[in-house]
Length: 291
Image (tube, rainbow, N blue to C red):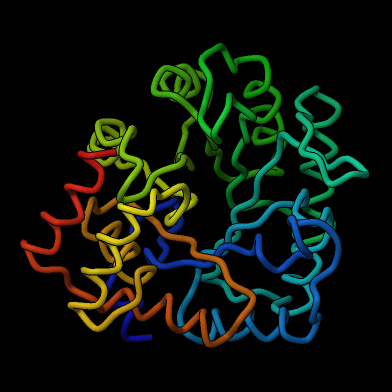
């Protein structure tokens, strides 16, 4: 619990969560498709996360599909009062494991009901509208009003407490806030991919959480070497350093590193007690500058 407590907390709407959370994506089979290779191990990781103090779990019913949510329910239901489960809608899986946009009113509505049923909940804490976007996992511009209005209506029906966006631009976030209060944004961001620097600072000023995905995604060999060198100097792993850098980057960053291993889970959570010196931060910042 110590490492998680050291990292502090932030708000997701009316919920307060520890900044080190857990992402359930890796609990599904290869390619986030099909059942886990070890069902018992998947349940053990979820239980170990909550026992370690994690009270923010990120999931989706299109992981599997319908796999991770059922695992979460089996492992943790009835849920602790302080546990916040965040899910995503806006996509479905093809029979070939492809990711397909699913943003019609009927599809979005069905997705909310699927999440409720498979998680065993009457209301979802936070639902992120996933925007499929452009290439390289990045967002693409364009109005999202038609999709978000459907989610806002489901919120008004009492099925959703809070709404977030995934893979969104600053303009889309501004548009969305005119329709419903946005409590979090999930975008690609890490020490080497810094396109959202200004957005993160603006969201922090507005009290909106930012949840980076792919904390080690897409590094060049040179960037990986620089990260590894800092990790070696601190007696830590590159992943721990990358997570620690994110925690020190801004107070509104919430981390959801995923794993299917209890040992790796504890290794990730230990990043909460890793303090980077000004020199280490400068070295890591230079990775992004050179990207």
